[in-house]
Image (cartoon, rainbow, N blue to C red):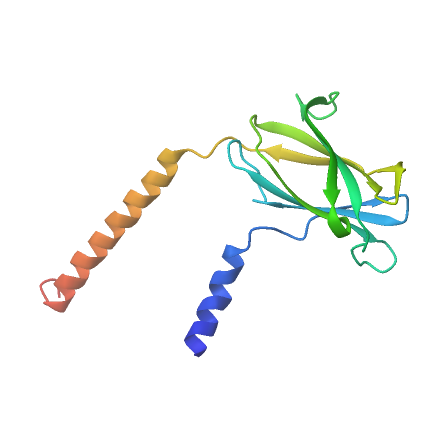
Length: 171
């Protein structure tokens, strides 16, 4: 049983896909948290976003529904004017939380803008400060294949070495 516990203790952190998230204070009343998985977004790999709105005093996620507006902008370089490449309005966030998936098509700096209103007061719109992400290039399959070949070669060398040691051909 202890072996299983220790194995899980060392393996589970590597299986976690999201981190605590980046937070923005809005109007001194709310905290908008955006978590993402994978932590480092890449071109061609869907990025999962988890967006929630919390009360700044209690820290608890709000219990009422919200309507969100998400925009993604591409920046040629930091400090440039954003070029909006994606926009979706009227995303229903039950209990002020929504999961969203976006697939980045270009590497480089991108900003994510999140605006929201509460379902019971849809005309009062709140704006969270933008989230800046550095999208990395697509992962090269050749790197993964090279790693697989190196692992297989290591296993073969280890097996051959172990066989010689067992039969005392080397020693």
